[in-house]
Image (cartoon, rainbow, N blue to C red):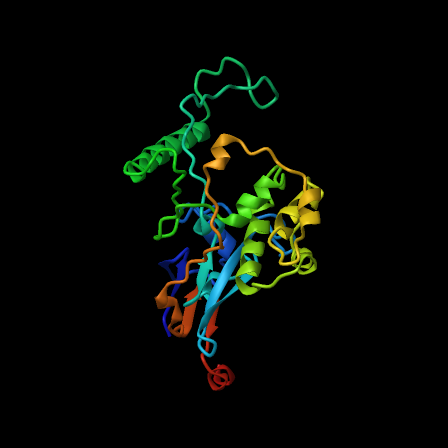
Length: 293
């Protein structure tokens, strides 16, 4: 059995060497090494849905990839051998850049005093990261039309448009603080990939594991139900229209959700044996080996 865990993250193969058996996927994604922060660690108990990502595996009998929305806060990294994980960053992203007039101002409060000569270290790091990202994007898009709305995602395959679920959620006033948004988008993305014929009722029922604390759900569900096969002209007439600004209009939405699934993910996973401190993880490939263990 191998002692490292290899899986596919947004279409790219990654390897975790001797991970602790208790290391959860949400903590791995948000670690300083990976830095994919779209999935949020809300309740940490699988109840709020803020950490939702898509887990994909190959069904050899049906000869197709199966996609399922899971809670990253409940999934150990050691259980991901050979599987494919997709985060919100891997389904298409809005092209953004650092604002040229980004500034920092201290607040007069108990936690900040006016006249402090040096900005907070975290802000300096944030500004440096934004400027680096802007320069990188300018290089990536040098050959493209500035007004075409071309986008770059985090998967090896460059995205030229954003996740259609995210676009419709925003276009229907479904975001406020945004903390729960990525969880809703990923849950719906997996559902659309597995259910080509979905009704409004089925769409509403699929969100029983996603909690929003500020929008009241109506706008969120409206945006999601526009994907239903039984969405009618009357539904469209009742929909509260959102005024989309010029920048958003250039963010082209995909016709379908694209979930990265490389050919290498079709091969059977290898058995895993990880020993880290007093904790051990074993993945026996057969019932007989499980009984022996």
